[in-house]
Image: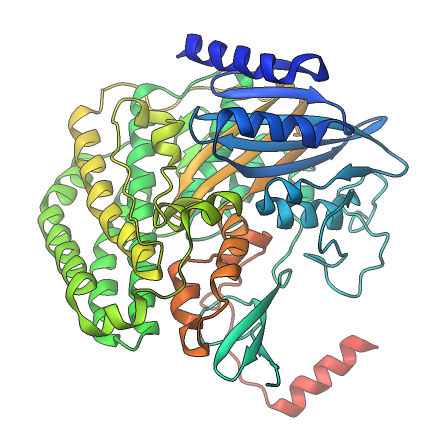
Length: 152
Length: 388
């Protein structure tokens, strides 16, 4: 099984080329570190070569000096989870929206905007108060480190 | 022709849980739908970063009552993966058993509710009568009917007793007979077929591009099941048969669940046979190394995924939970278009939506709290006081 994973990782490596770094992170988990400028192109190339892929989850996390976004995509044919990682500017986090490639990313991106404030450019319906109540202010991002609400 | 907006929810007849849909209807036909989430959001992802790994088992269990076993399995598995520890073999089989029991009771619950939704209340009663057998089995194995508290980091908290195994063997034929009956009704009954067949069709290409998971995707002939394509725990040793249907309508989604009942029962029977003797729990370090891990589990409603990021220490740095209904909402919202108002409950129920999962809320147990009666005036007085 590990050999199989290695083979798939090599295949992804050949598709991604010098646009990103590919790491095998355990069984059926592949991390692809890339940049936001080429992200959509890379994902499109991977899907074209590897077949049916759906969005499993989008994780946003605030690190010390960046905001990191993980696009977890499950490839149905190769049975592997491809996690595309990009780092964003902490002051004005802006990422390209995946909805033009996989429409299923819509709600995941809405959630990331609502809770972390990551702006997805090209998203058809990006709005605040997707999960949070309507009376919360528009700069209220509970998963950001400067959020102090609720802690006494 | 004028288009009318029809608000559906948050309190509505199809589900017990609050959710707001805004349907745009042209006469009887739905032309568009908007989904409003958030009535049950309670910020569990944030809360998890302030608790220890052990405390988080119980918090993850409380994300959703019905799929609590799937949540704890996924959480403990993700943490174990990061620490490089595996649960003992016996615990892995016990986890399979408890997961499949939970799947049976969850599927029976939704099939029963679906029957009630289409006005077939007798069937609702039968199904819930037989669901009781599964709940008792669950109680015998875990000590509790719903909130099992069974999984823990490094194994499970109780062993399966002789009494449980005997009880299961005795009840298997009863359950099988009941499942046969349900299958027969779903295949042959004219009322069921009229309400579910060709209603809310989700095409295979849409199911993939809109990222449907679980029975919703499998009803549209998409071959995905975490137990099959990314096997975890004892599923590595006991392969499963993935059930798919080609039709893609509400009926196909319900039939996937009906067939999975038989499959789950077979899995439990087989794992009781094969279960090795030995420990069912390991000690586990309190502190975790720095790193990341992603855990995937097939919950009754589809793929459940936990992404854990640790900076070392006793508490997680970030836990992302993506629950199956969150993925299934978008595909199902598209299937409403072109259907009639009367089909709304039938379509909605065929996805088995679970909003407490989706938004990570707290379920209030009305049995525990006092029951009191309040007049409308009193209620509005209370409300006004809150406003000040």
